[in-house]
Amino acid sequence: MAAATMDMPISPAALPRLLQLCSPALPVGAYAYSQGLECAADRGWVRDEASAGAWILGLLNHTVRRLDLPVFARLWAAWWESDLEAVRRWNARLYASREAAELQREDRQLGAALARLLADLGLGEAAAWRNAPRVCFATLFSLAATRWDIPLPEAATGYAWAWVENQVTAATRLIPLGQTASQRLLVAAGPAIAAAVAQALTKARFDGSPMWYYTCVKLDMEARKELVVSRSGEQRVRLAEMASIKTEFAPRR
Image 1: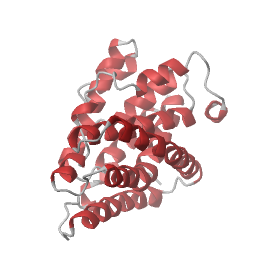
Image 2: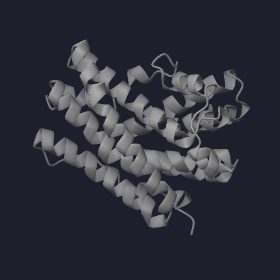
Image 3: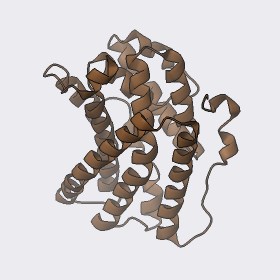
């Protein structure tokens, strides 16, 4: 049943709900976060349209495609099958992959804000996540997607688009960029999002081994290190120790 729903086109009734989830007007406070872009702008690593595009599309390709979107697919499937144990497991793994306390706090606050909103909109399953000590935005986004009959490819595309749009909005404010330059970045991101979603869903569908998850985390950390070192010339980069992914988060065999 879940596989068939993954491949079905989105219905006219579900499309507005997807647009609602992706809207900058969604009251979760995403505008307040930049995922490191503010620091990059302050240090001069990101200073114009070209460097902003390299930063945003680089993270999309190396981090969102390799880690966030494959885990998002697992979360979507777990919610669709009402497998709460799997939801908690994948949420914990994604949360543990955030290699800095600031990134964990950002994900936790966005996730909790979306949980409160969804609970107020009548999704009772979201209520338990409002005060959870570890909650990811992707977990609640995927919950809303399944309950609002949004197929996985469209849900994943919407999730990636919302991430990119928030990054472009942050760049517009921080550099600053003109409105036309910002729109050029969004146009350029379109094909990159489509490719990232296609590759991520293929990975999630055909590679469910325990080693896959740890490989994703390792690639995510290495990608962020590459991006920062290439722009700063510094060798000291703050990365979380793999030991922070505790035994309770380990994939089950």
